[in-house]
Amino acid sequence: MKNKAFGFYSACVTAVLTIVVLAIALVYASRGGQVGPLVIAALAAAVLCEASLFFGEKVWTDFTGIIAAVLLAYAMMTILSGGIWNIAEAVNGIKMVGQPELAGMNYVLIGVNLAAILAAILTCFTKKSR
Image 1 (cartoon, rainbow, N blue to C red):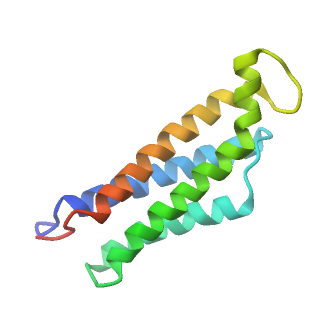
Image 2 (cartoon, rainbow, N blue to C red; image 1 turned 30 degrees about the vertical axis):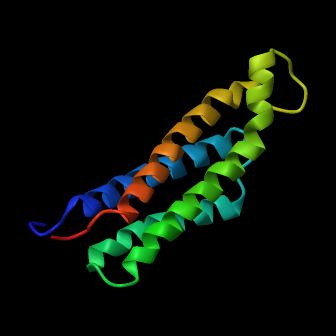
């Protein structure tokens, strides 16, 4: 661990945040939110992409950070597009097609997922080892 640089630790933060997003997404889905199996698979694959740095810095580990950022962006936009009615109905105070009681979880998912995306992008541009 002595020869690890900032990029390695930001990849670890990305992996932890992605696991948190995955857990929140599973709870969100259990409460009636729209989370497809591809979103769960994308989040799991993003964790595996960031965990690949534990095997050492290779040529392909530069691409795994980019792939993780893309998978996280896909997950965020898919969850947001499914939950936009929750947010709209919570803001307007009406109930039509969404579940306004899930709007808070949508906000949390967006915030944590955005932090994970930013950490993944930061990982792509920093050195992983000294």
